[in-house]
Image 1 (spheres, rainbow, N blue to C red):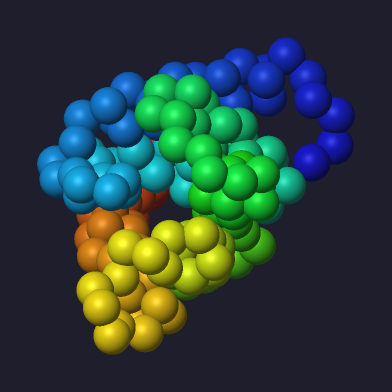
Image 2: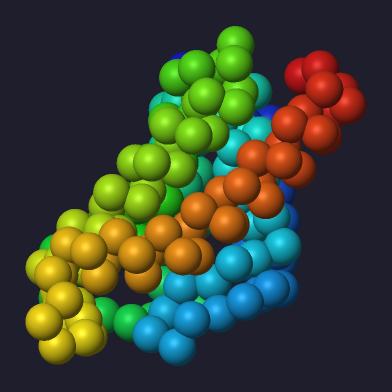
Length: 167
């Protein structure tokens, strides 16, 4: 990551602003939380791929905190960490595999999904239908919003990334 210079801080700020604006445009929202957005993850993926995983993970963690401030839902400190700063920071892993952005995005999304799944099993298993395995419930619930959101972000990122000016 190197030093946080003025240019990098400005890039992070613009990434966060664009991501939050896009987050505020839901395509679909589940009743207990989680939404498919109009590409809110794209700015984080682009920044991670261009600037590396450290910058991407930092930006993702801040993004997660901002999402919490917009729609706060808190049941336990560990749930908060799993669902907000950790889950979104894991999107920055996409910067590990900069040469093949699609693979990086898939890996980053998988990290986010796993964090939400663990939170769902530990803290939200009571929402599972009677007799349903908490792991199955958490996987199906979280996958139903995270995977479509990630596929949309993947497609948009792959389309716009080659068209962006080199830094």
